[in-house]
Image (cartoon, rainbow, N blue to C red; front, top):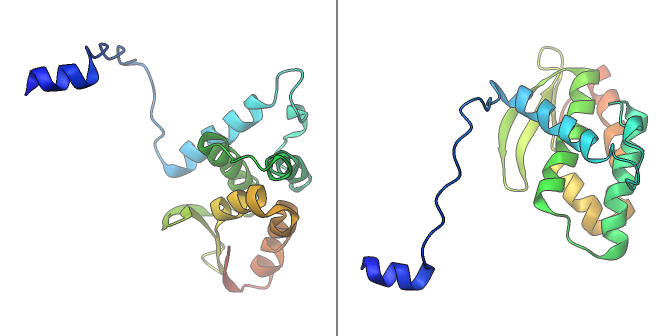
Length: 163
């Protein structure tokens, strides 16, 4: 059997050494914040398609995220999974910085949900499906429009899920 696997896969490369100093996030919140920071960093070098210095976690900065996703839509190019996750994390973190909340595990196209206002409201924000949708469906899944729906629900103390 070992000879068959060797013939099929060849001699496997040795695994790279594990960085014992690598730190794991202590919570989903910390991990999401790190991924959002990686999104900003990805667009910080000169020549990036958007100005990463304007990714300041403000509601206005979401137009830049929308522009990145629009490029995939216009080119009819699939959104890479890593960029999908980083962009989603950034949108999540814009919301969490403005409204607070905590992340829960979701399912399907939204494996994470940001739950906001649990004391007065219960607004579940499902960003990942919306980010993917923006790259596939175009402007009908506008990220700034989606985001603008959060505040009124929280202010009114409503319970809702935004998808």
